[in-house]
Length: 338
Image 1 (cartoon, one colour):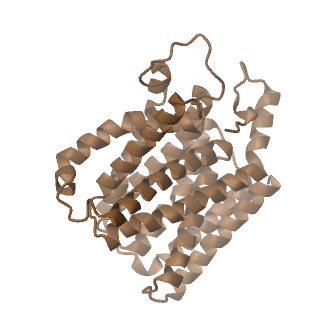
Image 2: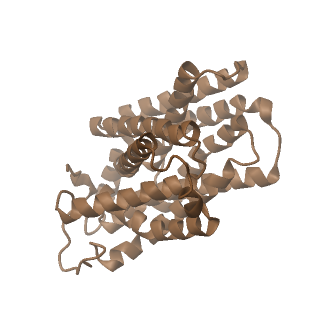
Image 3: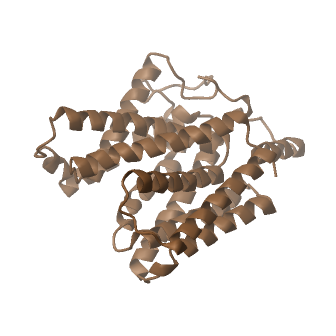
């Protein structure tokens, strides 16, 4: 695996080193572009396979799918690490005792606890956020994640953005408001849940960049610690809800087509999580959020062309177009180092 030498932490920070880090964070390299595109490709493909499991086979247990994806990720990471195909750290640790069961020092795993907690909260709250609110308004409120991400990047990592970047984010949010303007049906509980999910998502992405730099872990290491901490809690939650018991009674459980969809879904989820961590650490948390917005736009477009069934709404089209324009403007600013 190719590692980025810029991820190595200096023993101390001088003013020159801080300026270099800030300058590097404003420019997206070719490798960063490939990482962002890979994330969006994996995300769109994963949505298709999840859609096949949830709709084509009518499998109703989202928690079980998430648990399978997370468990598969942990197994793959453990096997590849044991076979020395990958490493969990930017550079091999010296003078630290590695636990043979968790493959990392316990102190390092505990250091990633805030990241895992923010991810678990985001995961659980996101499942609730889609209830009681229509899709246009849900999309509108979710787009405000970019604003929360900018704030938490500043407070957690000290990251500042140029006026051009802030302007492009403003265009994205404005486009989202226009897209959902016809569905402004206020529901205090649903709005609060969606905004809580946005905050958890922003904290999670900002924590990836912060914890990744301070822990010395690479993307694989962050994924391993995240799965190691979150999987037991998700297993307990799924068991208490009775989803595991109901899954054993699912009529298509041993159907080859359903099993193939689940396996591909788990593999794509592994690749997606890897590209999320890689994109966030190599580019930035805000870039990851913008890529998520672009992914949503491409998903809507592909769904519109392939499946149809979406009524034409000029306000929605204008809003989605503004969101796409803002995302493209942001990408241009990053490529030009603005």
